[in-house]
Length: 253
Ligand code: OOG
Ligand code: MG
Image (cartoon, rainbow, N blue to C red; front, side, top):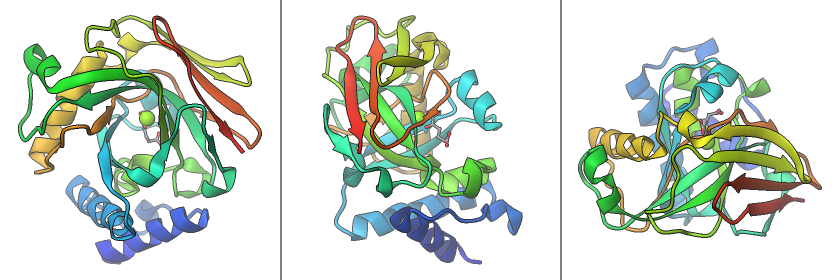
């Protein structure tokens, strides 16, 4: 099966909310091949008129790596059709087996072509915000190898961003909770994200530069979840609380 065919299968799976077998059951893609497949997959979304909105980092915390059984940082692309407005609603039927996880979002102040070190990372970011990501693996039973999940655009499905705050807002060592219908589902601390969520932005710029992906002013970077993800169902209100920030919330309908 060529990359284009794999990308088409994954794109159809997402469009039809029907899971597919893991690629790794029949073919072991290298990491480079998996990212090449991801590119083709995302280009299909762009051809339908969607726009690139930034990137999401994955497996930047031990909690997430252990939950999913993979052990390397990954990155995927966010597109305009994935955006859920704050206090908005999103339909359950758009997804196969959606899970929600608490995230921290960063917004780029300028185009970024090169890797940016930790010392100067705040110069390229103009705002940060609490966020919730919906991940929805296109593979059966939400099971995958590292190459599988990369090819599947890192399970990207939707994201909701709370109120943007200045870059001086404290995001290191803050408590984070994911609530479903006002019950605490997941609790963690932002320092679980690579010791410091800013490090995830540093790694995002490094990986984007390595793969020749230019990050644009206004692009969003999701730093990766600090806690495991929770399955969500129609009728639920999903909320993220981070100390010092306004809550972010949406409904799955
Ligand atoms: C892959 C996406 C991981 C994160 O925040 O670590 C991710 C998955 O768990 O299906 O978004
Ligand atoms: Mg995530």
